[in-house]
Length: 171
Image (cartoon, rainbow, N blue to C red; front, side, top):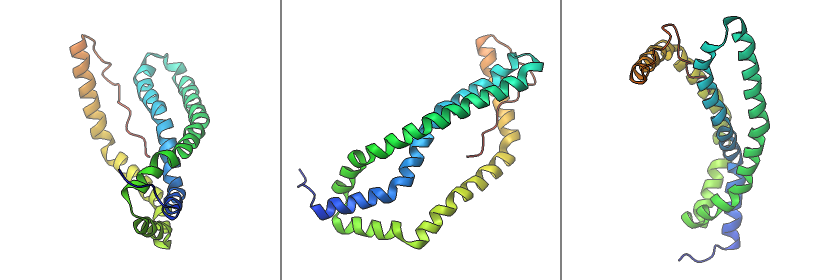
């Protein structure tokens, strides 16, 4: 059984947590977005059943619903993640790292180079996602159609021949 953390160690862990706040917030937002992304993926094939003249309107309405969900739910989950961080991550930091190690982590997280890297990372991630989608869309759509046809055959349902599968959205 580990001895209780000193006040200085608790303070260092709290500082690490404060520096981790943006990552914790991002985790909360991503968790809130997952159901919307899953619903969006399932809606794609279902849109084929909507009358052609209504597809664009229904698509925009669904996009608005998804956007509203994320705008309303995202902040709730983000804020709860930040609130749970100290009681969840704090004890783990205190248990797994010495006070000196926590101070080293703080120096690393506060370094100008790390900050610049963290600020640049979303742009790098977006660029990679865009290039990946551009290069893989055709292959993914082809493979998804083949999978859809295979599953359809197993279920005794024939999928529409020209139903393109949704390509992954850029992050």
